[in-house]
Length: 469
Image 1 (cartoon, one colour):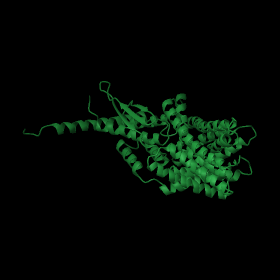
Image 2 (cartoon, helix red, strand yellow; image 1 turned 90 degrees about the horizontal axis):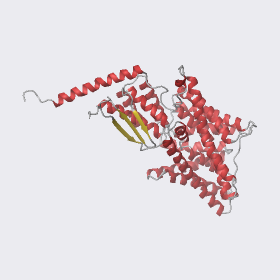
Image 3 (cartoon, rainbow, N blue to C red; image 1 turned 120 degrees about the vertical axis):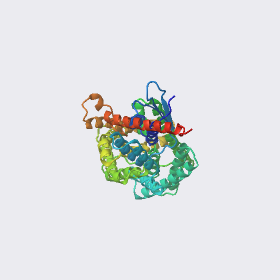
Image 4 (cartoon, helix red, strand yellow; image 1 turned 45 degrees about the vertical axis):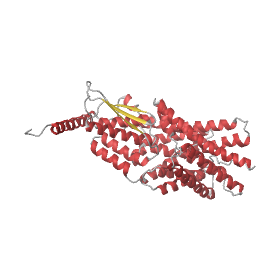
C-alpha cells in the first residue's frame, strides 16, 4: 500500500478538526458533511467520503483507483456550545472554499481559534446566565423583585453545575440538581411569604436549563435523512429534559408535603404586558448569546431578532384566530429562519447562531411547569397535565421545524443560480452555500501533487547512501 502523503494527512486532519467543532456546537450532520467536503475539495482531495455519527467523524480518500483508500477518524470528546469559535470557523471555511487561503494558512487559523481566549470570561458567562433567566422572568410577567431573585438563583445553579462538570458528573444529574435548586428556592420563598412569584422563577429556570439542548440540530438531522444522528440527539434532548422534569417534580413534592402547593401565575400575551415581555425577550436573547461566546459586535442584531420573534409570537397568539402556543411558536420561528440567513451574513455569524438565540425566549418552560403542577398537585388522575407536557414537546419541535423551513425558503430566494436543483439544495445553517469551484479545486490539487512530489524526492534523497560508499 502506498505511504500516506504528509499533505494528504494534513488536509484530512483539517477537515476532521473543522467537523469536530461544528458537531460539538450543535450543527446538523448535513451541514457538517457539506463543510468537511468543502474543506477537502479546497485542499485538493477530490471525491472524499464522509461518515458522521453522534460522536464520531470519519474521512476516507482514495488517490487513485489502483491504490487502497486511507481513512482517518476523530472522536468528538467535548460537547459544548461555543458560537464564537463556530462563527470564526465559518468565516475561515468560506475563505478557504473561495481560494483566499491555502491548507497551511487554514490550519493556522483553526489553531488560533481553538487556542485563543474567548470573548467573555467564565464569570461573565455565569452572570449572563443569570441575566438570561431574569429576562425570561420579565417575559413571563415578573417584576423587579422576581428579576433579582431569579438572577441570583440561576447564578447559584450555574456555579453548582460547574462544580459537577469539573467532577465529570453526567449532565443529566446536573439538570436534576439545577431544577431542584430553582424549585427549592421558589418553595422557600413561598413558605416565607415573599411576594416573588415562585411559578415565574421555576418557569424561567426551566427555560434556562432547556436553552443548552440542541433541539434545532436534532430536528434538522431527522429532516435531512441522518436518522441515526438525529435519533441520538433526540434521545439526549429527552434525557436532559427528563432531568429538568425530575428536579422540578422533587421540588413540587417537597412543597406538597409542607402543605403549601405553589400557585401557577404565568402571564399570557396581552397588550398591557407587551412592553415588559418584549424587554424580557431582548434581555434573554442577548444574554444567551453572551453565554454562547458570540462576539459583542453581533449582540445588537441578535437583540433585534429576539424582539422580532416575540412580536411575531404575540401577534400570532393574540390575533383571535385560535392559534395555540405551538402554532404561534412555529410561525415566530419561521420568521426567525427567514431573517437568519440575511442577518447572519451581515453581522458575520452563521444562521444557526441567529436561529438558536432567536427562539430561546419561546421555549416551553411555562407549559412544562403547568403540566407537572397538574400531574403532581392539582389532579394526578386528570389527563390535562399530560396534554400540557405533550404540548410543550410539540412547541419545541415546532420551533426547530419552523426555523428550518424559514431557511429553506430564504436561502433559495437569495441565490442567483438558475438551475432548480441548485436553488433547492439548502438550507445551510453553517458553512458555505456552495462547494469550491472546479477551478479552485483544480489549483489545490495541482499544489498538492507538487508537494507530494517534493516529499517523495526528499525521501529518496534521505534514503540514498552517501557518495564514496
